[in-house]
Amino acid sequence: MKIFVFDDGVGIFATLCKLKYSVAADYTAYILDEQFPLGEKSPSQLSAIAADCCKKAFSLGAEGVVLSSAALSCCSRGGENVFRCDPPVVHASAYTASKVLVCGETAAVNAAGRFAGVIPLPMPRFPLLAEQGASRSDVAGYVSQCAEPLCGAFDCIALAGSSLSLYKSCFCSVFPNLHVFDSLDGVTRRIRKKYKKCVNDESTVQLVSQSGADVSQKYRFFMEELLNAY
Image 1 (cartoon, rainbow, N blue to C red):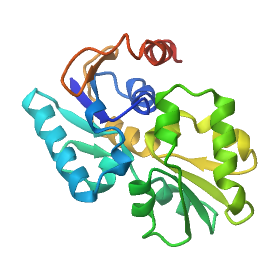
Image 2 (cartoon, rainbow, N blue to C red):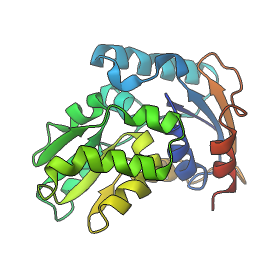
Image 3 (tube, helix red, strand yellow):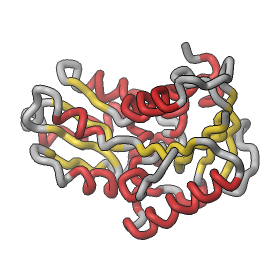
Image 4 (cartoon, rainbow, N blue to C red):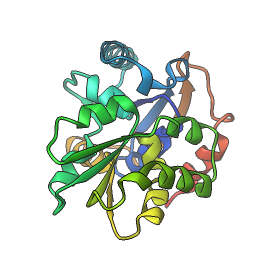
């Protein structure tokens, strides 16, 4: 079974890590390097990119498409066998919290603004930090710097972006007494339910650029972590 995953950077590995152990499949992961960072695109641009990704995947025989990018997810129309990452604030709002700090790229944070009790916090540098493989201490420092003016004003945190999910432990270390939600559990749960009769014995992962070139070596550190996880 073929599942295609689309994102613009290393946040795709957070999604793949959840997926490959949830549903055994042949995953083709496209890093949209020519579109990085997606969070700076307009809604109309994101909608067009998402449509192109789905069209390309299904033309290549995909049985399912995962839009790992929160920016793509919030601007995509979806469709049958297209799985968008949930706005994490949906899960956070079901929690016992009254105020949710939503962190992420501008497009995804703005999309979350329609929910009640949301405190938006854009973190525009995050995708670049993740792409550069920043240390967890540097990322934690950036999180602290961004969130410090709002400390005490929120009850939990929602991560609106796959690159943030990749560094979820940093948010947990900065705010050890708060629950941190991401958008990955919902999409993996839906895929597991949809493909529970999948015949694959184990998962394979092929990592390619937007042009289709193999970029496994370029991202070998993240690939090794992915293959050795669990």
